Each structure stands twice: as C-alpha cells, then as structure tokens.
Image 1 (cartoon, helix red, strand yellow):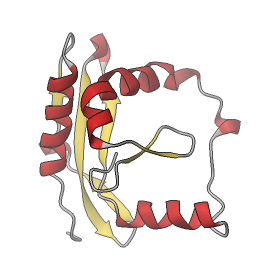
Image 2 (tube, rainbow, N blue to C red):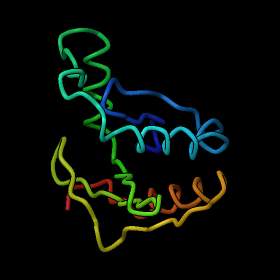
Image 3 (cartoon, rainbow, N blue to C red):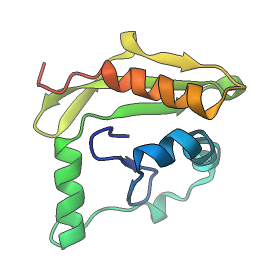
Image 4 (cartoon, rainbow, N blue to C red):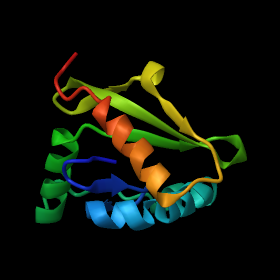
Length: 126
C-alpha cells in the first residue's frame, strides 16, 4: 500500500483507493484480499506492460511509492511492516518497526495502525 497515491496491489493490477474509502472499508477490503491470497492462481498474476499508458503510470507509481507490507498472521492478526527506500525502485522491510493489530478490531483501528506504519516509512534511500 502507498499512502501518497492511495494505490495498493493485491496480486492483480494496482488499485487506487481514496483515503476516506480506506478509512471506512479498508479493513473489510484488505481482510478479504488476505484471506483469499493462498488460493490465487499464479498464472493470473498481473504483470504490467510498461509500454502501455496504464503500465507506464503503474511503473511510475511503484517507483515513487514507499509501501507498507500488510500480512495476515495466525488468528487473523494483521501485521503492518513499513518500508525504507533502498534505491530508485527498491525497498527494504523495516521489520523492527512492524505493528501487529489483533482481531477483532474496528475499521478505525485498522486505519490508524496503517497510518502509524506509513509514518514509520523512510522515503529517502538508506
């Protein structure tokens, strides 16, 4: 996920989600994606065509973003791991700054944990 652009990738194409939508429905949307992830077919993974206008836009968004890794842990706990820019288009996971949100939780608590993880990201190369 990327705070600045509102883009997140869920194995398929990049999706843009407004902050208000993420605040209200982010928990539901992300939990759905995380729960179905193990059953996804690798042959259907979206690989952007960097020569198309959409592919160029997506490639630029990926280069300029500083993402937060979101993982589903046992008992439906959600782990938010901020990232640091390593180079122009690569990041490293800041596992020592990860936050775990236990279930059950609320959409607001989810959004706050995600926001806290974004605040821990390092946008410049380390």
